[in-house]
Length: 358
Ligand code: RAM
Image: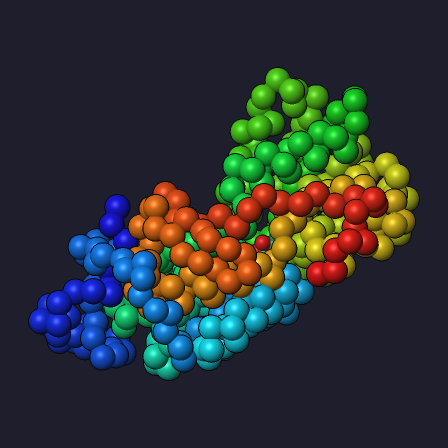
């Protein structure tokens, strides 16, 4: 599929498109080359184009009051500074499906050059993201993807397959040789990222190596600390023989660990999944948690800003095989479906956790 078709159309066709787009009510800038459908002919990338200065790069995470998002967007801010651009951070206080739409509409009105968004729902954000693209704004998803016909590229923290496999593997290790019941404590039921990891995990669990594990429930704490805590509590009430809670969310794993660490289940029920070392340190030190994983969220935001700037400068369009430089992280190549993979996740244990500070 051809992607990111906006940059290098001829002046004439750009002008024609501007006329059409104004009619759709989108805010247009100097020229406009995208219908928002993701189906237009792709302009060529110019790998030698200079990175523009002064780009307006806005970050819209799943929600603002999540320490994970803070680290991610913190990395984005550093990159925007290096790029001499204008950084903006906006977002809702909850990760519900449609909570981001009004923010996207405002960013369009403000004529941002790049919107970097972690989609709370793959489809709910699509009409407004496509309006943004029609208004010549580059849309980069990070953390949690939107449907691929409404964004130009996706910064994936690690491969979806790799994350799902690692969650299954950690659950198996934590359950011990007898295996037993495991449960997932996820974020929101519509989160693209968690759902794709859980899907891979379930496929892994069908393999003979995992025959001793039984997934009894996928619960949702909505990336809300209190709700996640209560869901963890509820899991143990419903499944008193539970061996492992696997939480593929930093909010969920921290809440589950807090609950288990102060309950009679400590030492009997393991907690693993994806967590921030700084939030998990106390639970690793008190032996509630022996292993969990993550990537450096700051690097995702950093990479997203560089990808957005490269795209807004015409260096890349989002097509497979295009390359760009992401500052201190080095060179990246765009993969299939506009995906740019940050790198492999890191596993944290008592032995290495003090080497990490995020
Ligand atoms: C939570 C969010 C985020 C996810 C991390 C692992 O903070 O759900 O989207 O990437 O966990």
